[in-house]
Image: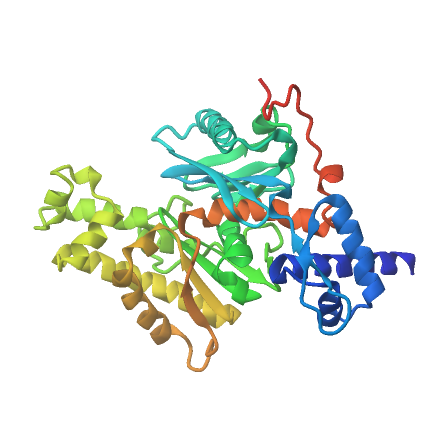
Length: 418
């Protein structure tokens, strides 16, 4: 019975925090009405939150005849979180406050050398750089979230398999923890992107959606009841490795005809390079400065926009495969929203105007009839913000008692070990 009461109290306190965070400034009576909790219960929770520094009084509302009620607001700058996106083309680190406001951002090229030791060293320097750039005092650091593509052992901070980097069984967090005295979590980058949209982007409108990441590779994540659906071993959402052509080319994962090898940004670039090398006439040769190996997905989309026949053929085929993959997900899972995100979204209408009709055509009749197809709002910040949001979620679930749980041990006010 005591355990049940404790769980109920923790859930109610979390709900009070969320109302203040998302609806504030707000008064205690309004919180009581919205959540169906007694006013003394709300007052108890808000007093506790004020004591932790997570909530503050910012003034008083107008009176409706009695005493003017105090207005409460979530303290966004109480703590800050580092969010990291380890991408195949670039790596990004942000410093984010609890309200999703970015206080600093640093981006570097990933480079061709993807040896784990080299990448981890580069990653550590990137994190140090964003900490220096943001100039946030070390006692305000709540933690660090790192988004990494591939199959992960998040409990132990290891990369089990990452096709993008061709890594197997790599310990990622252990060497990073030797450099930073911060609570750290590792999350799949597609799941992080979905969490970013769920907390701060278009996903706030939905509790059940699929976020599809169209970039160097192709991935997705499923959000159910507002939380990431992980599956039995954390590998859910691997839409990029859905087989669409059993006799297709070999994917980095070892399978044949995966969506990723047929239609990702990298696949589009490689198909265009092959076509030009085989003598197909295309403006892409000139657009690349005569360097065929420099043809990337952006050049292909740009050429298709100019009615280049080779580029149009490649894009049309890729979009067809992507549309089939997304339609399969709708038929199987019946989400209320599909969020399209990732670098390929920057292509704009040339992608979306072709993609949406394919999805609609390939959906089973009457299936997914309530689904909305939306473009992500956070752009390239979605993954690092989502990785940071996991730390924020832990903080809120702990009743905003952050510093007692996510302790830091800095010497001489230094935010990283020498």
